Length: 343
Image (tube, rainbow, N blue to C red):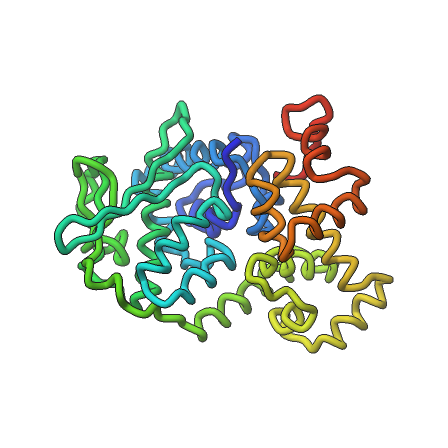
């Protein structure tokens, strides 16, 4: 099954509501709920997202719904893995790293690159099919790539262009899509994106202020989603930070805007500890990936912050009584003992 982080459609409910439609009803039509979108690190079926975007575009009477959604987002929707990409020596290295690790954000999408003269071209390939089509998913995916490159370059340049095979009757694109209008080419032979080859050697721009603002907004959203549970808020932050390689108590506390000792006291008051929440979060994520066969066990161990697969396997057996491989054989989705792990 192809999966995607729910964070990819951040802002969906607000956009649909702004269009005068009911986001909860649209989510229900494809078998999703608002609760599944609370944590951006929850994984949901890629096909459901594709269908959700298509029915939303029709309900909102907006053929450019995917681009409208992407326009409201930043590269933070890719999760903390995008931070690692942005810290590469050059823009080319960042894009290469993104190509290699894109599966950590979405399983079912690949990014290809090729050089044509003084231009570097990008093209996505999708491994899923939907009876409703994937036109909006294509828009959203290229919008995400455009946002990512914009942020690394530090400017929204017209030299970064993307091409869509679809036609569009909308005449006032400048007011509808101010972020993309000047760079969009419709009725193209193929979907894709291009940037000047000379950009490849640029050092990526890391906007620390925007990063801090992202975490502030993230914590604020967590407080709305989990007003009565600091445990759930902490586990969500842990899930965000595991991939970054720095998921210490001090780091989590910093993201939440409190001192580590204060966080420890709050947890102690609920008869809990940071180590306990770290274990619970790792186990939940591990079972989610294993149930859906979303990545190799080696990659999963690294994704959970383990330096060695053997250590992860030993811990997992302590948690469940089974090795990761045996657990997967017994409980994978579609299997005889398939379980619901929130994906």
